[in-house]
Length: 242
Image (cartoon, rainbow, N blue to C red; front, side, top):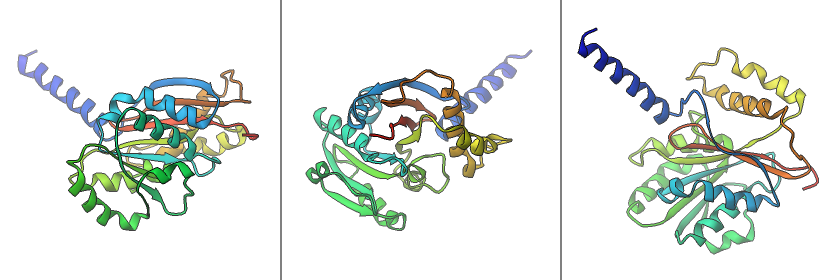
């Protein structure tokens, strides 16, 4: 084979890997923390920050997605933000999805309730403040935070000079067999452009992978996986009594 042929093959492979990472199309997720138990959601948030210390500290903007079906879901992000502050990173502002009830702790920061319709104006504010040291936090439902939805808040923030945006979203760690069965078709012949089912497919695959794992489901369980350049998911189980 001529030398130029092998160079061409190398370029094609390298480009494929880059675009897979850049656009969140990684074929296999990277496990950053296997399921473990925690005393509280806040403790899980603190540990999550420690596991993601380097990528978070290098960001100007992070989008934290909360599971709307999980009571007190935002307490995980309260713990993460507390850990951020303790690491001497300044929080400039917290944008939160309209209708979300913030715990009293967030009174320490400047906050602003927002909707998707406000993003054009918010992006102008972000661009003007991007040279400041510190972090701007968005709290939004997982469906609006993940890169796995084409029209999510994170995707809209990226559609500007802001560039790639870090997102960390909550997903269920375990599911009832009936719910798993309902989600199973979401992975059938899934196209990478099928944003409507990508999130459901990720949910199904992870919950199914844990279905035979022995876990103490009487305790809060948490795990972390990376799905793209700046796409992270935290999988959570909270006992009904919590």
